[in-house]
Image (tube, rainbow, N blue to C red):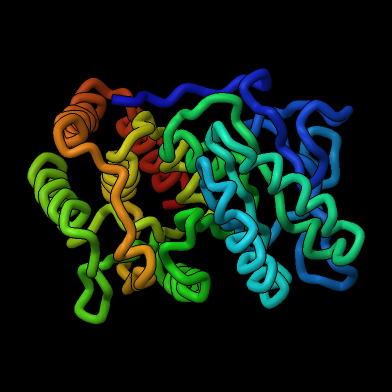
Length: 319
């Protein structure tokens, strides 16, 4: 089981929209600092002061975790840039989870080149590169806690879900604090390679049994959160492996967040692709992580009681 820890600046190769690793830009801890965004003149983003720097607060922050994706990252970035041009109040954060290939280098180079031709869009695209592979849960947590946007969304970096579905998440967050993409929705697309589908069904049933969650699909890489809810939830997360989605939803429910479901449609090419799931080893890792969620909760590691007491005190003061 992967347990989350805070990254130090030494673990971060870069946290910037531009510049390759090893340049004169400082390495920053994504939990505590981040470069400023560049808002278009007259755009509705608000400029805030963070650690002595002017930083733009966007309506939406979208995190895209990537790993060893050098053969596909150009296509992904092209689609993200096209989508970004249609959403001038959104920022996009690529998080390279310690890739062993040139994924991070390619991303930084492409965004640097973009600053010449389209500086406004380049100002809304950031790249975080970690020196070591830490797991999707670790990556998403850091992106969420670094975000100051009104809403935080994440989707798979290989664009298993078309980017237009992010609009659906954003709309759902107007009436709920957490929006969860579900492939098992009546109009959803859950066609997948058999091994992946079987593992998904088994894991979801285990998750519901161990945590009491009632969602039909916990693992779709398409989720959204209002900013305050994201900070409340991700600041408590401890799981870095497959089970991090379940931990996030478990905490959302325990914290009393309102949750809504949206249909998640998997792209045909992704549904037909192979799976990285290791049939022998991963089920045991998943089960151990699920049990750990309940263990952490019982031991008070999530500090849910402290949060409940704070909420109660505020209610009494407002009464």
